[in-house]
Image (cartoon, rainbow, N blue to C red; front, side, top):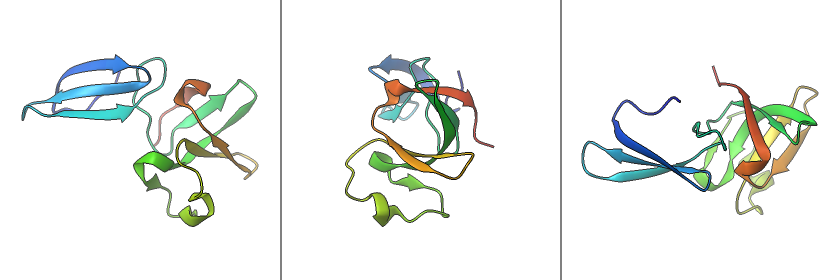
Length: 104
């Protein structure tokens, strides 16, 4: 697993990791079922049918500069994934995604 260097303890709880920082605080971040933290640009598979790159992490406000976030503003949660063919689709839950390759 790859976690921030400032983490002292990591716990996976229902597709979120809780990271205890050295400063005494706790940070939560979304993760795949394997425990790896989800990152913008990751290559993922959804249902082993659709494969693509995460271009927008809706709840976390992280997005690729190449995409307009207001096109997806009506969605409260989830991820926007771009396929190799250029199609965009919404994946609502972390549990539906499997990590294939890390963002560069």
